[in-house]
Length: 172
Ligand SMILES: Cc1cc2nc3c(=O)[nH]c(=O)nc-3n(C[C@H](O)[C@H](O)[C@H](O)COP(=O)(O)O)c2cc1C
Image 1: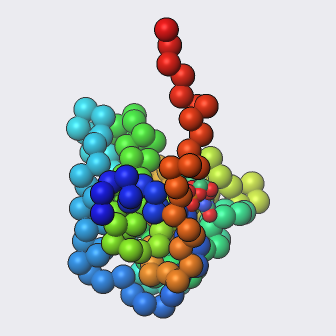
Image 2: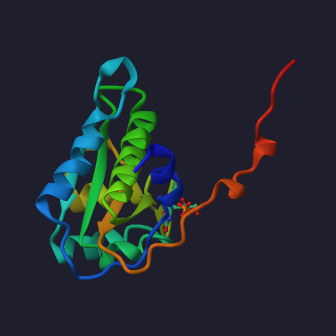
Image 3: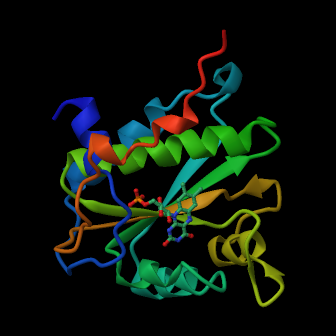
């Protein structure tokens, strides 16, 4: 697919089938994550691939709204930015999440970004909840999780007519 077609087809998908994501598909998504640019090439992100149903279930309860879909995913990739390696962990993690989202689309898979940073579960910090599930230290920061799976329910592709050109301002 041309890159513009991948961008149009990329939709947040929240329902998945039971068909497993194949190893070569997962490899390509992780390659995309590792190809993402990082500030000063510091590469602060690690990618934790979650497949166990119990762990997917626990992650799906890590915030009040918008994480339930992880329960039905075949896999989730938690992007873990090391704040001791780079102060740009938010930016670097976000680009990696975006690259994975686009590669999943290219492969015909469903995927969805689940925000963790700045979110909470009944007042408890969602990042800390996820760190506890993964048993990792506090300097590891979690912008979000990419939920992944095959799907019969990928929303319709965007079209170029959907884009809001009023957001573009040419300065004279
Ligand atoms: C920073 C960010 C955080 C998001 N967090 C969530 C989330 O926690 N749960 C969810 O279901 N979707 C989440 N999404 C998906 C957005 O809701 C979605 O991208 C937006 O509604 C546009 O739809 P589309 O992705 O299908 O084009 C997030 C997307 C971004 C970029």
